[in-house]
Amino acid sequence: MTNLIALLIIKLYKAFIQNVIEQVNRFIQKYVVSHINKDDLFRSTGKSYIQFAQEEPHLFRIFILHQREGISSLNDLYQSEANPHTAEIIAKELSISVERAKQLHLNMLIYTIGIGTIFSVTTPGISTDEIYTQQEVAYEAFLKQALENEK
Image (tube, rainbow, N blue to C red):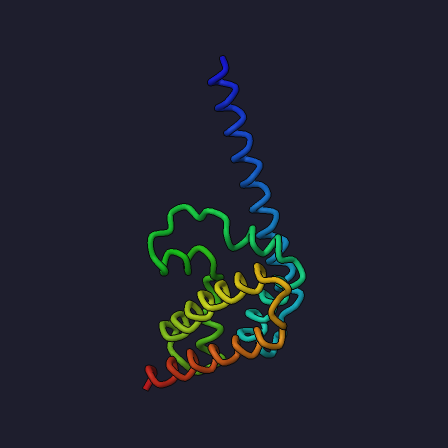
């Protein structure tokens, strides 16, 4: 009987954690959509995640650090985390192939996850300006690479 109760508690705990993760993901999606600049969708999306990391570091950590099942490659991560139409939008905006846009988006996804995580776990905290500047430097480098590879 004790093992059955322990298994039930574990199952309930896992369901609770999954529910929290789903709620956090929905909250972040709404937050990002409400904070993006429609005229600069790609840059402003990354900035909105960093802004979220600043305003809600605990929720950002839940979003970033939760266990992701079925991920065995960066492509799997991209398929899991990115909107399937984002690469098409980026390709159109920057006049590059969808494949190059996907690689640019993946690079910035990885970079933003990393710098957002650093930002959300440091005290007293790195300035937002420093984070945004570094994010812009990375964007410019990745964009340059995507444009050069397109030729």
